[in-house]
Image 1 (cartoon, rainbow, N blue to C red):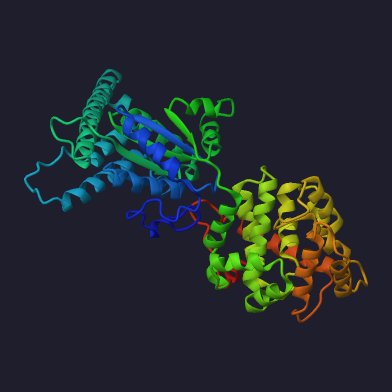
Image 2 (spheres, one colour):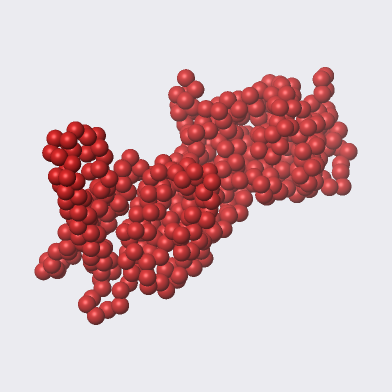
Length: 503
């Protein structure tokens, strides 16, 4: 899955860092060097906000490690969340990796490894308390055979099971060491090499299961040169700790006993992230344009004639580019706007762009800023939903929105505010703004963009009514789709998908 999409459909084996839009190769090289320097068992947390690209980064890193002769077992923890104990599915993943390599070997004289890890894991995953619980459920058994005999028999059962588990743990450790040696081509007299196990999607798991994963790693995988990389957003796991052990438990402190290192994945540049959103929401495909076309649209925005030509060729693409550029500018100016917030904003806008005639989107910049108000200042959002451009302008000035040479400026809102009053002749007012000129040129450019749009639109809607209708629509989609968004699946939605979701 790419970091906001279907990573399993992509292969990074030829060049792990090809098309590395988020420029993560330096981070990958750094972690690879760290891993190759380790000898004992280590657990590394790869931390990053939701949507920061952890999944794609880890897939690329896995390919990079494999390219440097370091085998990787990639585990999607969420897929085994149904299991009572993560030890068994994790052991199965390692067994599968061993079997995959065994089938490719031509040396059939290689002796079998000790019994599979899964066999040992099954024995280890059966808790001793199961016996006690079974007996407690039928207390008559103690009276039937006599108290002394009962204690003796039950104690013997516990002792037998404890010995079986101890033997299974020894076998498991031996199997893990042999699996590491086999996968790393370690000869008898060679220094052990690292086997890397990457665990993704742990944040999405049930709290009990997520904490169980960490505890199993600590108790059962303490074998030299076994290195774990665990993706986490830094928030869900501490919350899971409190869910399991109570709100009085300090989640971050509790987790420190599981992680040897924590690596903070650098946040992506807003523009890089916005281009990823265009691709992952399949906006490029839907409106039939490319990132090169997007650059041409951006270049045309300062010249009314060429801009008008772009509009006439693909109105939907121009709308999408202006919305995503405005979002990137807003994110650059508002560090508090998380990647999840940005994705949710664009999710709503994406739905609007797909379901509304493109010539009715009078100002993509203003629409994007209005939609972002939900996250920037929720107290102002109700006023904006009623079509208050003055409120938007005040918020833009409060945020220090630039006046010139930016995808989103206060001039976009100010000009829209000037031409949106009752009974206003929009086209004449825009012409007046263009003729009057401005030292910064920002109002002129904004007015030119709007006039170019109006020159090819079939109808007219009062701007305040347009904004109210647009935000009602995006708000409706946001409520419906909010739970759909997650790091594993931020797929582009087709028009048919939207119809189905809103039936």
